[in-house]
Length: 365
Ligand SMILES: [Zn+2]
Image (cartoon, rainbow, N blue to C red):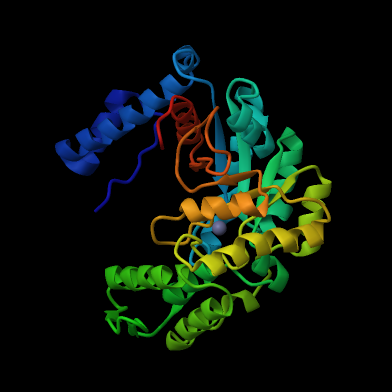
C-alpha cells in the first residue's frame, strides 16, 4: 500500500506519533523523510539562497510548458491526462508575477540568438495543442496577472474540432470493455483485464501512432477505436479551440505558434511528411491569423528522439525564428533558438517554484 500524505500542520512529534500509529516505525521514518524533504524545499525556495547562487551561473531563461487548464482535471483524466487545475495555474501565475519576470518566447529566442539582456528570473509561459480551456480558463488568469503566453496550435485539431490522436488512444484504452487487444503489426495480444498489460498496450499504440501522419494516422486511431469498441470521444464535447478563439488569443496580445498539423513525432516520419507537417502548419496558421507565425514547438507523442538535424533544418527552412523542444533545461545565450529547452510546470506550487529555481541553476528537472 502506498504512503498516504499526512497533513503538515501538527508539530513534528505529534506528526511522528501519528505516522507511527498509522504506518509503523519504518513507515513513519519514510513519511518523515519525504516530509522533511518537502519542508527543506519549502524553506529553501523562500530563502535568498537561490538569488545568491544565481550569481555564480551564467544568465538563463526558463520556458514553461502547459497543455490544458480545467476547473476539475480529474473529471477528464481518462481522456486528456495532461490537465492542470485552474487553482494551481492561478497560483503559478501569481508566483510568476510576484517573484519572477514573465517574458515572451520571442524575448527568449532573442536572448538565445544574440545574448540580448533579459530581466533576472525570466520565464516564458507556453501552451501546446490548442485546447479550448486555454481560451476559456487560462486567458482570464493570464490577463489578471499581466502574463504574456505563447499558444502552439495543432492545426488539424482546431480545423476539424478533433482531439489530438494521443488523447483518443488514451480514452479508447481507458474506457474499453474488451478484454483483449492485438497490435495490428506485431500481432502481440494484450490481456486488458491486467492493468499493466492495458498500459503496455496503450503505450504500444502510442508508439505506433507517433510515426504516422494525416489520414493514415486517423485510420490507425479509428481502427483502434473499432477494435476496442469505443465511440470516438471528440463527438461528446468540444475540447479544442476554434479559429475565432485562436484569433481572440492573438487579439489579447498573446503569441500564436505552430505545433504541426497532425501531431506526429516529426523525427520519426519521412522527410516529406516532416516537411509537410512543419511547413503546412505555418502556412495554415498564417492564413487564419493573417500575420507571420514565427515560433514552433515539437509535439511529444512517443518514441525517441523527438527532433533531429533534419527537423532542425526544416524549421529553419520554414522560416521559424524559434522552436521549443521537449528536453528539460534552461535557455542560455548562445543556444540555438531552434532548439530551446523547456520544462513541464509541476502542479504543486512549492515544487513548481523549486523546479524553476533549479532550472535557472542549470539542473534539468
Ligand atoms: Zn502536443
